[in-house]
Picture 1 (cartoon, helix red, strand yellow):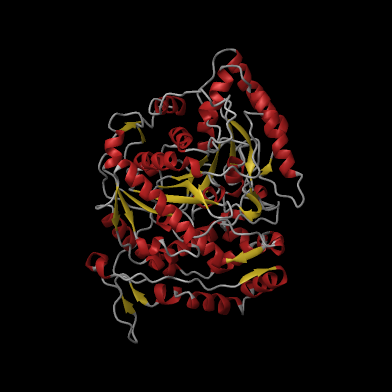
Picture 2 (spheres, one colour):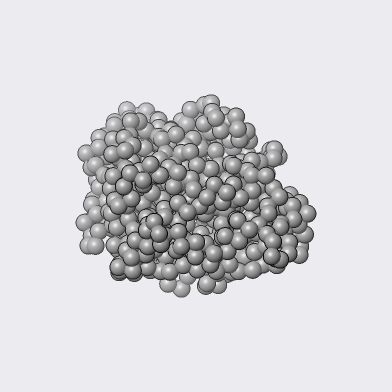
Length: 615
């Protein structure tokens, strides 16, 4: 995928400056990743080779050459200066939004966000028995209404949640959605919330709502292991992460620490340490990762939402595979203090929910940059879409959706891209939006730059412990990834940041013509879990298909959201990804809400689902 490459003589390849590239002349070239699929003894032998002082450099060098990484990073002259974290030009104010003051507390922000949603109507929500109605998840406002009207209490719901969690924990083979779970702590939180309702003084609409927290985000009284067996020994938890603290102030009940791909270094959710989480739509399938537990918990109905982290699609991929909504915020929009990987340039803490409405509420509570990010990133004002504004339909009518058709349809199964295209066409025919053809050059370069960026930053975080011998306590696929990341040089990292600036330029140019960019969230639906993979698996080819469309959200820090739009012939969910302008979460949520409304009848009930309020 070359957008501005010069000749390929004996000397180094020279790229033309990004602003001189004739984008219209760029030709799409499918990029095929080459890597072995390994489990069992072959995987163990492969890791031994990678970690061997003599043979390891030869193997990693071969892998990088096979995938054009050496040519791209070490034999190419890139004229742009490096961009070490996302930098954005000033953005135009969003239309039809409500600005939330970051200095106000999360309770006040949530209350303001409520005014932007359609008035709540409980009629039919609790009494309908018509099986012809489309499957709908219980929303946050359903629970709030049930508590306020005496239909149930947080304590009663807590017992149902506990029973569901324990059922999954006791399955054979083990497939726990939660790594750390304390039923007594959950009951204690629920009792406190129930008393507030009995006294007529709930804190907010989020009071008594059940949420999960990914295991790389600090949440007392639990450790943060990042799904390893040892990380709590080297990084004790002393207080809640800022994101957790903000939700706790709203009265949220935390059910525990959710399972994940170890250290977040994978996108299937495979974890031999605690058991691999199964997809509620088909338990022989992966959930996607690395936020595997959060996605499964929301998809199964056991909680209304979860906080995950997204450094390489880790919120959007499992949301898509599990049929829920995954919002990845702009880099720096949420405060990462108290997150294990809080110093990188690609990762954010973001919500997974069962509906876009709940994403709006959760986002309004979670958002707010840390002081240093306000100085360096200069974020635009924090906003939510005013979905009850008389201007809402007019704003939707003016939306231009960018679509790179050749890339959009470059998937193993056209059922994925066709379903997403159908959703876009329905959006346009209903609201009058326009689809604009765009070209995004150097997609292969974007993938490589992201891999080197996230890999180098991850290895830097773990290097001291890796060198001290802790690597033997990690899973085999984590060790394989870290061995590859260790091979990246400082020159590779800087070259990747030069590519980041080029690719940022191409995307900012695209956003001069369109308001959002649409792609499938993943290149495939949920892959099967091979029986031999339960003790470890390395499959970079499948990972590449899952990650195909997610890199702009992380390397460039752009906001993005995955919305369920249907399912394949096997009943597996398909997600549509919408990518927005920097700091444009409100506009993104508006379009996502419209897509969700149009596709509600296409959502499947998971085969494993806990109908908590009906019960």
